[in-house]
Structures are given as structure tokens and as C-alpha cells.
Image (cartoon, rainbow, N blue to C red; front, side, top):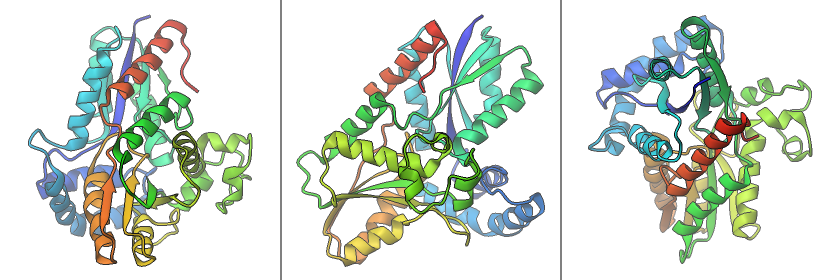
Length: 345
């Protein structure tokens, strides 16, 4: 059986033209695992309201961060793919959950190379309905419909893998070395609280009050995004020997009026500035590639908020992107799977 790998990231509009942004947002927001309400309500919200108001604003935001080569997320993902491909003899493809570089084309390209068994690698350290799950569900649907003889295996969430924590910690340490910061904020992408409860495989564990995320040895943690975010922070803090009180966790990018995971990043930045913090650094460990949410929402909007309330120095730590040690680690995981059929878990 011939093996291959498909790296999968979020995706991006084809350009900063509002028409392309609208097309991308439509696909993204109509995903039932992103906005998990009945189809009629999702259609009314997305096509009746959001797509009539948000594309121009989002297009303007993309224009602020767009690179000459194209979308930062796409460019960085392509760079990572090339580096990972150099670490293994297996074919390594790249796809996006949303947008033109789709998963069907990614699987087709591997199929055309004779690949019959694919390791799907969602480029998300933590599991969530709106990220990992939607990738795996779509990949399986496409396999059943178009590639029935193909077998799919997936790399589980790797938020607590020591080797990954080392890569992430090293990337942070390199940026804050010699930096006289007062607080390091770990900002993760937010999700509605109901997503956390829906992902609770026990259907009885989740309370979102802090205690359940700290409980030991519970099956719910395998699919609990909130727990996995806080655990990422804890392990990095231990690795970097951060002092209690000098770091914290928050969640960004909320949408709508339903309760989302708290504390919110923008309000946390504002509060810290008002409380007298003058120098802060911020890292976004839910993303492996810098994108709109890191380059514009955090590095631009976040810094503006901080300065408006009296903050002085705001340092944004890049994602791990196409770091050599990150590409080497992915290559190591891939080669382990290739020789032993064992995936990191």
C-alpha cells in the first residue's frame, strides 16, 4: 500500500477583492460546524446579514496584511510543505478546508501519484469542532464519494506532545529573550461555549467553570478545546519557567451574541493597560501559521487597544510557521507513521 500525507490548514480568499472575500466567508460561515445552528437560521444569518455587511470590512483587513506573494497563511503553509517534504520520502500534499486549494484536489493529487493510504494532518494543535473535526468529516465524505479505495488516518491533536511544546516554547523564548515585558498573554481562537459541551464525549463532564478542565484522566479532555488551550499554556509556562502572575490565557475572534470562551483577548488587553501594565507580549498558539487573526486582529488591533489605554510596548510573537524544527518534527511524525503505522497520540 502506497502512503502519502496531506497537510490541511484553514484557507484564505484568493485575493483581497471583496467578491473573493465574500465567496470565502460564505463557504466558511455556512459550515455547520462553524455556525452550528439549523440551516434556515444559518442561511438567514450568513447570507441575509453577514455577507451583506462584512466582506468589505474583511477585505480591508486582508489588504493590511496581504503579502506580495499572496495570502500569508497560504504562503507560509506552502513553505512548510516544502520543508516537510524534504524530511520524508512520502508525497506531501497541501490543502485548505476553505477556498480554492481544497481537500478534494489535495486527495486527487495524491491519488494520481498512486497513494492509497493518506495521513491527514490538520494544522491545529488543539481539537475543535470548527477546525479539526470539520476537516476530518469532510475528508471522509470526499473519500467515500470519490476515493473509495483510499484509506485515511489522521494525526490527533498534538497540544500536549513534548516535542511540539519544545518547538513552541523555543519560538517564544527566542522572541522574548532580553525583552523587558511585564506580562505574556496566550491568546487562543475563541469558540462558542456550546461547542465545548457538544464535544464532550461523556455528555456529563463539561461545566466550563475551570474545575473540569483541570480534572485528571478524563476522556472528555481528548476533544475539549478549552482544556487543551489551558494545558498548552501550562506546559509552555513550565518549560519556560514563567512566574505565576506573569502570564495568562484568553480567547479572541468571537462572533455574534452567544457566550464564547472567556476571558476575551481584546478586553484582557484593555484591562491590563488600564491596570498599569506598560509592556506586554502576546502569542497565539491555536495557530501554526500567521494569518488575518494574528497579523491584523492581534498585531494591529490589539496593539492599538493597548496604546489607547496607556500601554507602551506591545510585542507580537510569530506563530511557528515554517520553522526548521517544526518541519523536522512533522517529518519525524510522518516517518514514524510510514514505518510503524503509529501516529502521535
